[in-house]
Image (cartoon, rainbow, N blue to C red):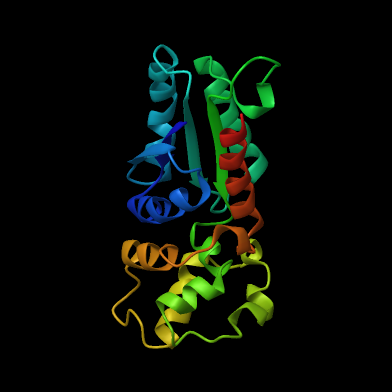
Length: 204
């Protein structure tokens, strides 16, 4: 299996470079296409999906990953599914017996950084001064329900312990935290849905 990842920004690319090999079976390959933000990816995605329609090999699949931000997740997912449908590509929701999945759409709720709060062990391995009880704090018990922006929350927690005093460097943090992540233990529901989507491809 080969996967083409379509991601909204370079910090997500840094994370997926480390995370994907820990989910996909040995021997699977992948390529990453980062964009300059969510609007850039959404603007280019319909044409790119149409382009893939005519030459996508049997053992290739496209995975689209976006942050929910403040959008309704169901509406955003419906838009992504419509893009695939218009391009003539098959998603899990449209799969029929004997057909293969060509596009998997996934959403990080509300942002990629929620996935880092979902694995506090990895967060602390990368930045040891972070509190060991972070996951027990009320606002962080459900990583996908953190309010006020998970990127801002991550910056705040790291700066509280002396990291990134000049401002969070998102690519650096994504690379260092994801390097320590164990996909199976992540408490973020949206991360586990992403993980299950990749595992489903490997079983197809």
